[in-house]
Image (cartoon, rainbow, N blue to C red):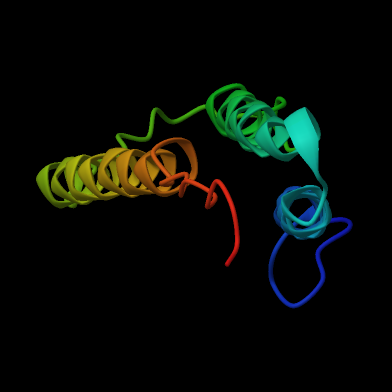
Length: 115
């Protein structure tokens, strides 16, 4: 396996670098003022899209396929989809709570006059 470091390929490092940069950019944008603060959502969604593209469309293997057909069995199929459902619900709930916190923040009235 050419290019493997610590038993993993370059794709794992690319994904890790992507998410570290997204986390850094999100922290910087959260500290911004005005409308720029809400670009965190777009940065995060872009990172999710890039990650899913990189995971769903891997490049072809460098090793030629063997003559014997190999059946690959996914024994953790149901568990993987249960985990995906749990993480999706958690993400949507967290997004809902963040939007409530930022959008529905109370605006307190200022006193008309000070005595």
